[in-house]
Length: 95
Image (cartoon, rainbow, N blue to C red; front, side, top):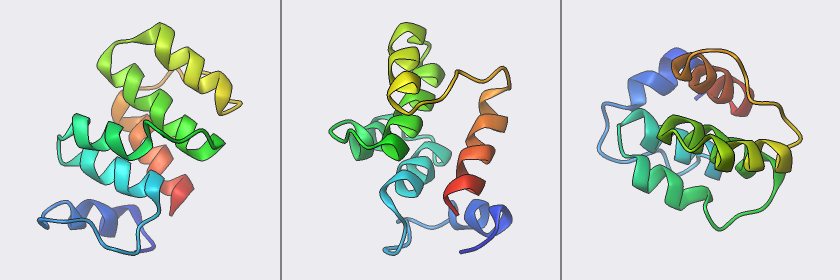
């Protein structure tokens, strides 16, 4: 899966592709509207990539303090873009 369009198409499937990285699997579940399952993918991880997705998820949840904590762990700054734009930027980054 090398394009954003293909990734979005895969959201029509019942399960994510087995070859997806943890960050992409989390974003896939989020794209399906399953925040809990998306969060469960990265909640226990502390690497920068997982922290970045974790930050986005808490921003989406509206927990800005927690989001900012995870953005700092990812060495990122909370972006001033829509949640949809951030989701797409993350997907593109991890593809």
